[in-house]
Length: 337
Image 1 (cartoon, rainbow, N blue to C red):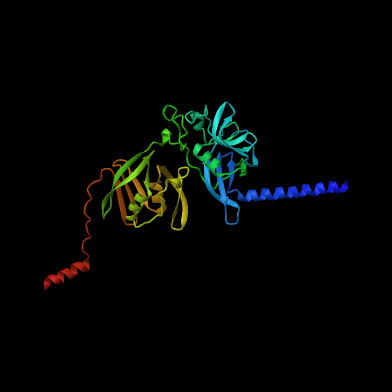
Image 2: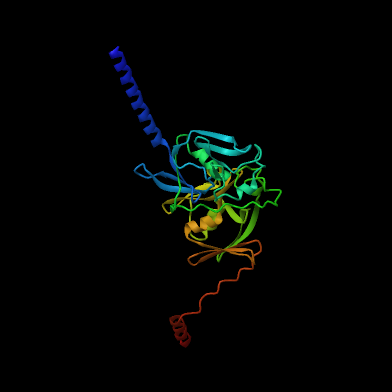
């Protein structure tokens, strides 16, 4: 009997050891580590450094926690595209952190993307939830799509300076009956916040006049890879951009330039990828200026300049510098012969 008990004990210890090994393996497989600063209402996502430690911050999201949100370190355990929430409301792209506490979108009155609680959306960045971590649809969908079950989440309070500052969250006008029911960041094609237009603009440089097409949305211009190549050729710059719209994820796209890879804002229109013009000009170190009076865009890099607009003034022929003194002196002696 004692031998049997000893055998069972050894088996349990072996099983525990195997489970511990599996846990460690699963932990090393997780690509990201998430922190939630409940005082600042900021979510930060880290990826691994060369040594395999989660020290590299890659994203920061504005969020809303609650006074009852627990502190501690947890591992995510489930995901739901739609999840019923406390108060007979619904959340999109929910990921369970621990117990009843989830990452999820701002609540909706119904299981319907058009029924956003817009007044609650405008509270993002403040302590406003019943305990869960609320995020914009764009941000919570990123977690839902990219962070596997078992991802570690650490939640804490305190005056801690976070490594990245999240982008500002757009405000919803409660009097805008067309758009107020939608999260402005929702990537759904039917989202009225995402309506943009294709615009053709004149491109003018010291060497040439041409036409170029842009996608315009919410005060920003986006340019396709072929048009960007055409544009930046005038600045003697070349950026390797993909024309594939599948490369745009969550309105962001990675770009490699001068040995570095950065994430910039982008849009997918049909099968084509479009890159935010201002982000591209910042990437190459150029200066971009928007003239609100003339509706012209000026891009400058070193001594080169590009002018963009629907109606541009006629280009004035370049005036060469006045002859230098040695040239004048040489011309004088030539006249004496």
